[in-house]
Length: 441
Image (cartoon, rainbow, N blue to C red; front, side, top):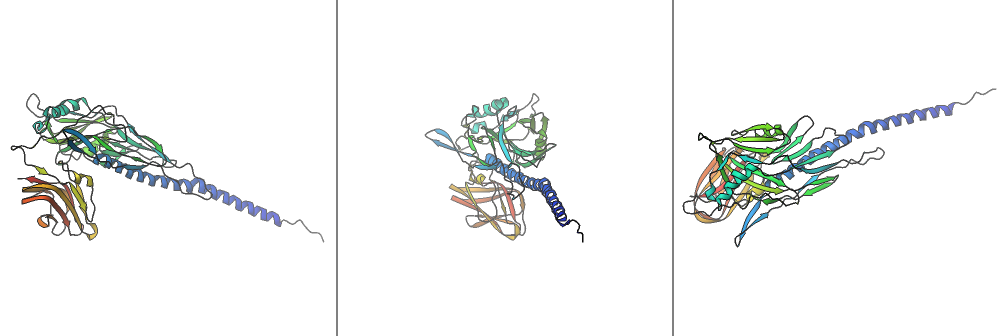
C-alpha cells in the first residue's frame, strides 16, 4: 500500500495565517479609526470644559472690585481676589494594546492690541459732586480722548484630532470663540445696561502659559473703580449734543457689532482691528472705570484714581444706601460679589425656584442711620406665577413684585441693619433684580 503526503499541518498553518491577518486588520482599523474618534471626543469635551473655565476667568476679571479705605487722609485700593483656574490640556484614556498620541496641551497668552480705549465727545455733568472736579473732567474729556491701553487674553488649543477647534478670546467684557470661518460669542456683558450704567474695564499684566495641566490666575483690581461719573454728549456749534464715541480695539469687529445690536441708544461702526460704539448724546450715562491685572505685573503708568465723591451737604441729593451683604438660602445667587457693594454699584442676582421649590434671598444694609426712607427695587426680568414674589423688610411684608420695572415702597422710621428678603413660594418663580437701594427721603 502506498500512502500520500499528509497535508493536515498545512491547513492548520493557513488557518492561523488567515486568523492572524484578520486580527491585524481589525487592530489596524481600531488604531486608525476608533482611537482617533474616541480621542476627538475627549478633545471636544475638554474644549467645552475650557470654555467654562474661560467664562469663570472672565467673571473673575469683570466682577473683581476694590474698596476705598481712607486712613489719616490716605487713599488706598484694597482689592478682593478671586482666583480662576484654566485647564489648558487633558489626557486620553489609557489603552491596553492601542497607542495614543501625546496628550493635548494648550496655551494661555495675553495680547497687546494695536490701539487703546478712547472716549470722544463726552462732557461731565456732575463734576461738582467730586472732591476734585478738575480731575474728573480731565479724565473723561482729555485722558480718555488720548486713549488708555488695555490687553486681550486668549486660549489656543493644541489638539491632535479636533482640527477646527476655536481660539477662545476675552476682550474687554466680551468672551467669544474664533473659528476659522466665523466667530461666536460665548458669554457677553453689555458695556451699557438698560439704566445707562456704563462700565469700562481695562486690563494689564502679561500671561504666557503653555501646558497640559491646569493653571491658576489671580486677578486683582489695581486701579478704580471710580465713583459714577455722569456724562452726556458735548454740544456742537449749533448747540446740539454730539454722539459719544467709545472706541475699543478688537480682533473681531463683527462680534462686537452683534453684541451691541440690542442696545437701543447705541450703534457700531466697524474698522480693521477696532470698533466705535456711538451712544445717543442726548442721554446721560453713568460711567465707571476700573483696571484689573491678569496675573502679576502691576507696573502701569496710566492711572485714574483717586476719583472720590465729595461729602453730602444740605443741598445735596438724598443719600442712597445700597445692600452690603446677601445670602441665598435656597435657589441660586448670581454675581454674589455685586451684593457686597455699598458704593452705588448694581446689585444683580437671580433667585430661581424651578421645579416647584421655593427661594429666599436675604440682603442686608448695615448701619443705616435712623430716618425715613424709600425702598427702590428695579427688576429687569422675572416669571411671576401666582401671587408673585414677596418683599419682606425686617419681618414685615411691604410689597409683592409681580411685574418688571421699578417698585417703590415708602418705609418710615427704620434704621440700624435693614434686612430685605425676596421670598418666592410659587412654582418656577424667579426674579432678576438690577439694583436695590434705600433712598433717604
